[in-house]
Image (cartoon, rainbow, N blue to C red; front, top):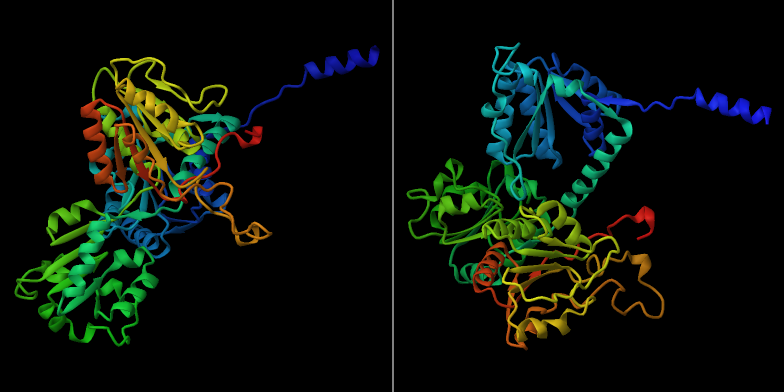
Length: 505
């Protein structure tokens, strides 16, 4: 008893203290966690500690004497590696000098992140040291599709605020999960009719030409372009930074006869290059007045600006792009907001982060028990939306009969990636044994026509494989307020096994 009493007395004196991290450490940890291995810049108040913390975590800091040069280096690094180049600057003048590199990244479509310190938030507008409305001076351009520049502003008081290491780890883990979803391999969808039209134009052209630029270089498209050129026998012309995707010594290279090639061609397929001053704006007298342009780009604005004969906007169609379109469509409905039922693994996970709820009791998901297959039991006047990635697993094909029979205002949106978490993604060493030719346990019928099931009962079905098709289907089905199924075909590699795996579910 004496020993126990002594132990308890000693334990009472033990104080467990949580380690505190400041903003500099948290930012440095974030950069290191997400694969940043180089940082360019000029240090000073208030970002010196941030640079030192990053270096201690394995990020190499390359110091310059001027932020302009550092910014140019960061933007070029982003282009060459495909990963965002990071520029670190002080506040005020340092931020202004860094704009040259950030503007270069935005103009070229190169991934870059500029991080600047700024004055204390409580002193903003009072004439603090190196004070500048940096948010107004720097317009952030970041998003899916076209790469570009992004700006992060960290006031000095934020850099010195502290949180516990456990809280920091929780924030980083959540950010890492979102980063993982954003980093998943994506597939680019273009309407089949557009591809067929492009192929027809090239097939019937007398003097076709393929032009490609640094956008194709950034996309690592050399293999696809080589196959296209050598299969079709169409001459090619690279822009200056597209050179090398195919050798200049290639038999079909038109570089030596550039003026003749662009002046005589009647159909030009332009991949990852803009019809700007480098290509004479695609206008006479350098180009024929009758030339037909097929533009392939990730930037919708570029297609709209140039007004080609045919514009193919290739955008990623995984979970995020359709979710954003659905989010905007829901917000456009106003009040009362529709009832959203969200389930399925990745569909629910991504929807939880992307979709916006503005009114109470307007969302149902898998809940505490992780249940799939909610049955809609009441015919409300409100519009209901069901987002699911597990159509067949939850017996949907049976209760759509009920939806149509009672004309319930339910729009079912199926995220169809071909299976549970995705289609057949087995590694080669997993495909063996006597049943190796069977479908993978996780795979369904690829691109299954779920939308036709509701049509069999008299409802309306939609097939959506592009942003335009999804927007059209949402607009029509929301306006009709009748039973409908929208079958959204997404990348079979977009999904991943999700959930609280450490808890075995």
